[in-house]
Length: 155
Image (cartoon, rainbow, N blue to C red; front, side):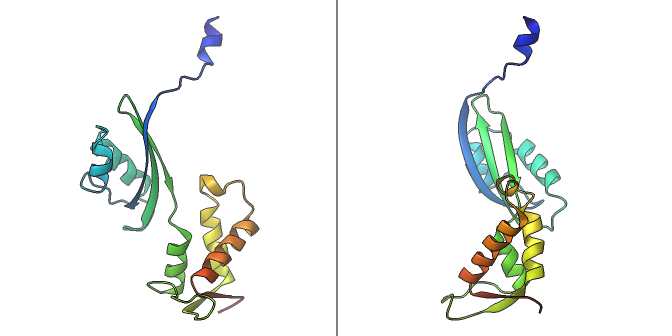
């Protein structure tokens, strides 16, 4: 009977699920993190130290998307996602923003090699693990077109 009870999963009641965008390696208990998590009495220093430790492999100030699940006992867990595709595309193209008239005005070009490298990074995210690299590349090309970027075979 005791071995059966060990296999039972205990569900903790969730108090909140919060999405944040935090610079890599630069989490501080000040706003916006302190404002979002402080309301639920989460240990802000523990979150900041853990987040900074997990994101130290990225360049500083890279915007990381974080999904934080806060439980009623004030404990938490979080999942870190890689930066958005549009952020990667802007960095690869060397632009500050996309076109105001995508489809009519092209602001820059990127190569298929850039698209493939971004797809390899995005494939590590939990939301993209089940997708093929080809499907992720097609999605990235669609995002690039909607930003006014031309995708070429070679630069």
